[in-house]
Length: 246
Image 1: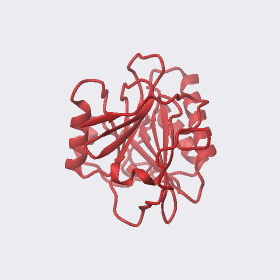
Image 2: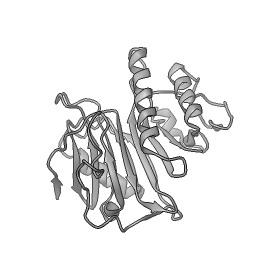
Image 3: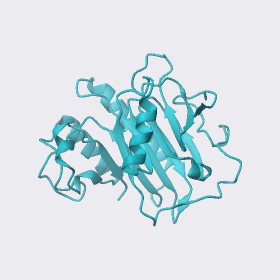
């Protein structure tokens, strides 16, 4: 069974859901904390539309099969912002306002930890943030969908500036901060330093250089370059980025 709440008024100037002036997400004083010392599977997936019938159910089944605890999704193609409860999980989504069923991002968590949510910030159809009360520090999940490689340079720069503003205004350095998503970038293979590990993909391109610059500015690492991924992931180009703070 799937249930949707009423649409929230979202956008760049809206209050976060759960913040003062926003919509409260629960009335239990956020008493449940996510224990970061326990093993968790956190990932991201460009789903290329959840608009078609059955796609959401299939996604939830894949999460169960792969035992994924928290999943960020890009290209949901859902308009507006809100949340959807289904199959024991909650999907918080942030889409555009023009009903064109393009772009859109979301974050899926188990329903059992929903009372640990501090707030959900649906910034735009490219950026959304979910803050969870956790132990020993709070957990911030930011899901993004960056402009594609053929997008104008000013659109790319605008995306990174908005991402910088969201992180600086809503996350703290002592918290656990993860940026998940499809950055439409290649940081390069065999390039290793304090930010990028040895398991990057292909040749670093211009978008990869911009992502690297952002990580330098925000003191973050590109974590999925630090472990080897299955060959099929590279073959199909599904190399999306997960960036935690250092």
